[in-house]
Image 1 (tube, rainbow, N blue to C red):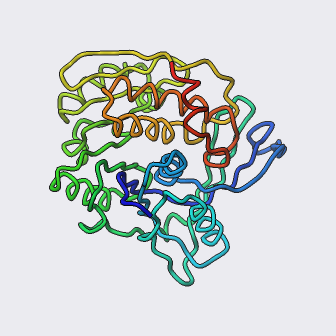
Image 2 (cartoon, rainbow, N blue to C red):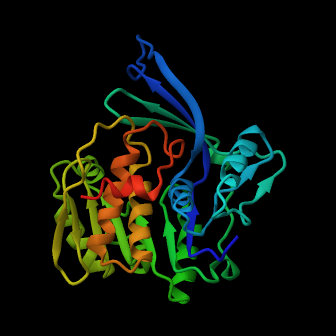
Length: 297
């Protein structure tokens, strides 16, 4: 294993993918049309795509158990030569995190989380950051371990990429270099609100770049200096949008490691996320870089 350049810290679980003809209601069941398991969780999704592209990546955060779900996740992660899982803790008698992903014909998804009240997290420590060039954080879990991780990274001059901060007073915002937010989440949290206005507030408060994704609509980049750029993602028929934001961050990080300007790096994010949406599951169909390049907008 070569020295990891990116550390993905956060959510790791076993996804149980269920393709349904409709979401179940009180009086009508949903019919399963496909089912399988793959590694999921925001940090794991990003890490697996990066490792598949030959980028040495370290993954840790949420712990696993010595159960079947944990064994399945470890087996899938272990198949990637460029993925370092040394620091993923395993506990006897602990139930590994699991997530049921309910995907409807329009590609949208709902989630049922298992065992969140029992969740265990490994704290990030200084030796885990040696040689790391970017820290990739997610918000799918407790705040405090992520806050400690961000502070540790900033103290070592390691830039931080994170997604899904929607409040200007959020404790993590001062430590962020690049923030990715979803326009659909902005609208759901505050109907009638304007994503770009929120992005400006977040950018000014956090002194960071802010990227707004919006499904198939143009991705908007609000640069730290105030410049606004847009990128139109390629048109695809979405089969499953689960993990699209995580894969966007993978493509973005790939471009940043190549020293591309942020708008050029974001093109790789758009391409990777668009391609991923064509297939069911987040990590079941890991595409190579040549396939991603064909989707560059």
